[in-house]
Image (cartoon, rainbow, N blue to C red; front, side, top):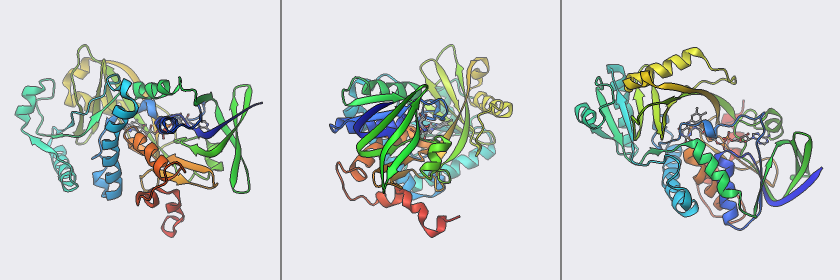
Length: 385
Ligand SMILES: Cc1cc2nc3c(=O)[nH]c(=O)nc-3n(C[C@H](O)[C@H](O)[C@H](O)COP(=O)(O)OP(=O)(O)OC[C@H]3O[C@@H](n4cnc5c(N)ncnc54)[C@H](O)[C@@H]3O)c2cc1C
């Protein structure tokens, strides 16, 4: 048994845990991060990497849209101030993104959605398809509606996730433990330590300040102990990665219609995402692969010549109201950051700073979003099952 101690212990090394570790270390405290269990699903490296704050406008939840907008503005800050050395290196682009339709149903849906977005203060710009095709000759010439949304972008989450971790590793204030949080030990209302298992080895890890659980969909055992099982539901997403001879896209794009999809360019490939089903399994289903391929080559016909290099699957951690959960929960010294759902890549840096400013004892301030994101919101009558 090895005993370790730090100021803060973080369970979960997806983007949420890594961004929080970054912010904590910059505030001069010691952090142990536990991750790397093969049993637990991990969403971050599987994401499309779209940074699209307008994406949930159709849900008519002003708080959610506001949070996504704050997260988009903060992302730039995080890159320039907190990760300056990394900004060029992970297919990052904030030049905006495109929205297209190639048939009448898609056109109507697209126009409705753009009207919602405009009402919420986003600035979709309509372009004549002919003009767009002059600039982007690889697109399907049947495009019948096209909009450009500034202040959106994308990055490559695999590289981003690796960079976040490798930026932490050299710090003497950071310790990475590869393993699974198996047991939470508590006395009275406080966690005393976590039992972490790594193959044959067992660790007893304790925090002098707080334990932060950023475990996404998580393991069943941990979710049961943290009473998160009914709050976090996995939403399955299948995606494809296609390698093309030459780059076909600079900005990400989204196709509306019967078979919707989005495409996110990477330096040597294109990510085609993603299905969305309320399911726990990790099967690669032929129908989903066919639909994604079909819609991808509908919008970029040359993709039918591309090499299919990956069919991937993962699960988004979603909450009952689709908003993140950030706050103290169950024990006086336990904090949850979860439910980043479909926008964790975009949200994680902002959630980390929000946690630091409003939940941990480092910089306490009064922010009305604290109640909106606190896990206690689900204890209210309307959420009771
Ligand atoms: C197909 C798909 C496409 C997506 N596209 C986008 C997109 O375009 N843009 C965007 O912003 N977001 C996107 N997302 C959402 C985004 O990926 C997630 O919201 C985000 O990755 C969640 O990050 P997280 O750190 O909370 O969770 P995760 O990345 O899942 O990390 C949780 C970590 O906790 C670890 N863990 C769990 N239990 C334990 C335990 N008991 N002990 C130790 N470690 C544990 C896991 O191993 C994992 O590493 C997409 C997601 C999917 C699945």
